[in-house]
Image 1: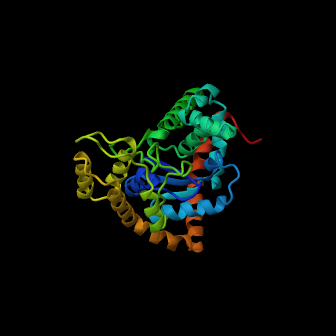
Image 2: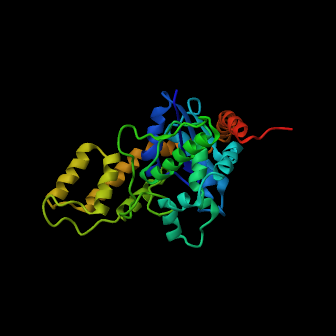
Image 3: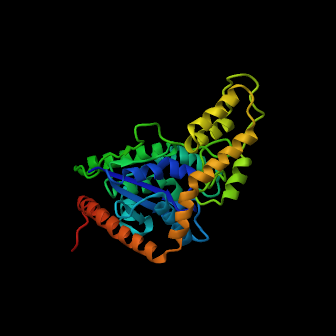
Length: 329
């Protein structure tokens, strides 16, 4: 059975992009693949090195994973920092990762441009840690968004390089898992880029309905179409993209027809979109409240997940350590 792995940084609540891009599809995989799902609290430190409540953030994401349908009886659900083998492999992979290839990653250059005063070593080697997350379980497939494709390619390079340097095929070369379609990229409400917490343009799974309505109504649009069948601007197309994900096809077609005939009222479109998002997220939000407050259940889930993840990771690291030449005296 092939192994699939996916993770979300623990910088707060999951947003609609996380859910539509990975979590919802990952739920569907649990019966057919050996699945690992983790909360990437180490990754979050690259851009948030002094978190106010790291543990609280992990708890939120854990509860949201479970509320979204991740089944700890079918999948391995764990917290990244509770599996020390990940960091050991991260260290060893860094020995054969080169400065030039890390500096060329698009996300690193973008982070440097936006935050020139927070260019830490962890940010530079972020792709190596991501590779360690994947390779420590010898994952075959990884659900990734468009922005992570380059990082996944580096994981493939590191796996291939390790196998070649040490003469054994320890690691498979992981592939993007996109369910036979283009990789999902959910846009933000500011009209550009992807949805994300750092960008301040996200709709979160446990947002109160009033908050969702306020956010959607303030979403960026434009002055409206000036001629029939005009191509929508990026902000407007972004709203249509989100509507495609949460609304009834008939609703989407109604507003597309309105746009094509230059009769669309963006206020009406936003009101409809907001209500569709509220309805779409309601079951997740209700289950989240129940899970978040169940200490015993969260303790059991993380304990079992840690044990299963460490068993898998330890088997890999025994092979890695042997090939490096680490032996007890």
